[in-house]
Image 1 (cartoon, rainbow, N blue to C red):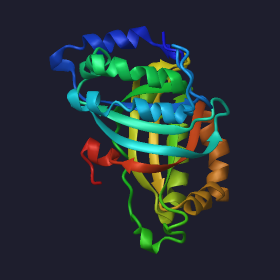
Image 2 (cartoon, one colour):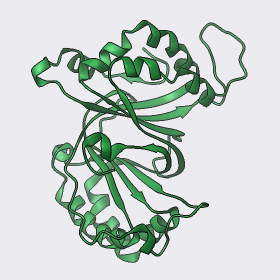
Image 3 (cartoon, helix red, strand yellow):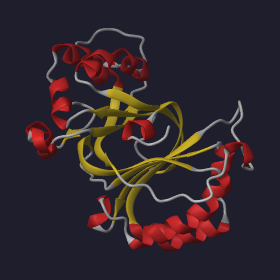
Length: 271
């Protein structure tokens, strides 16, 4: 058992035993919280921070060997909802099949690099996901024409939502109250330039804290100022209290800045 989370053995078995004719791509969404200082199990002295140890771990070779691709990397700038843990970094890896995820864990080069992850990671969620159909966005606005366009000081700003609904069907069918909220929020967000990068349904959390989730959503705004314009809009705020809070049982809402964002491209949408 890793020191940074609990393994869902039922989901691990599903990943490992999916029949080839039923298998296909899976997107693993990683939420990462680092130790202040890396701590190696062999007791070696190190000056590495937890983040630096995770950078040493980065398994680019093993990922490429199984056909996987890193499609999203971002640092967390704001944690609006969800107190603990305080997430530091987000990553998304697309694996060509579920069994390829298990195959990577069994590679010797991956296992050798893993000591760095164990040393640097305090807590992580690794959430297995499938793409959802996105709501139709009408009257999409060019970022050059929005009230708060991207600038050198305030560039694209992505909101990540990790969601568990009260309604158990929420992984595939968004509850009515959430749909009502989305209609109001969208009427404010679209004029401010929101882009729906990807929405995912959750099929399992391979590593976490025992909680289950239904959906993971990535929405990008042209700037943080543009997002705050939406967040503070009185109509959206009222709908949040009336509908969103009614629909959602548990959630994280994180403001993040991406250094890699090919979510749409990895699904087959327009980058």
